[in-house]
View 1 (spheres, rainbow, N blue to C red):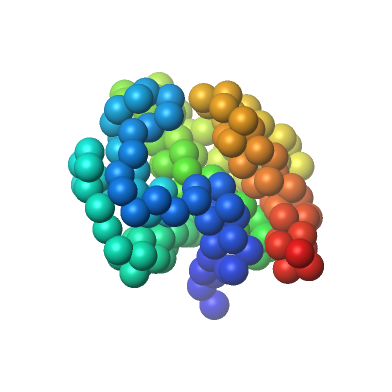
View 2: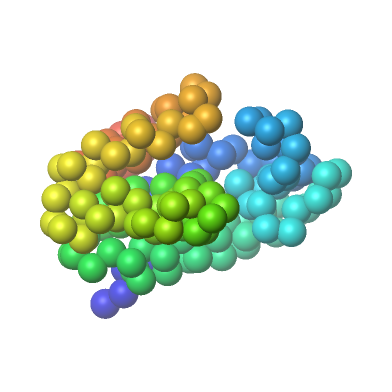
Length: 165
């Protein structure tokens, strides 16, 4: 059976992103990439506005894109909470692009990320320790998100807290 992002993953994205129906600039750059809805960036232009329904639909599509990256590149078995944490991470950081930007799969250098290499070597605990290394930019929201992803990855703590609270 093919894994899909669970309600815990959706809760983590929503908690981390918030939903804004008018496009806003990236906090780190003050410009591109512009974001709208629940962290959607593809095709977003300054001043763009969308409906809540569009925001919710794009969240489903964007999470499925992130899940496809995780399913394609992680060769070792994952628990649901590990999969969810990685989907949120890919949703936020991206897969990366050789020569352009670092991400979960590719680094600018052309190498695979340490997190992916460790996962595929079955070194789950070491892979979990890679989350905080991606606190870029080191804004409070990013630091908290990486912490939540790591906690979810190692034991589903975020999921449990959301389900109980």
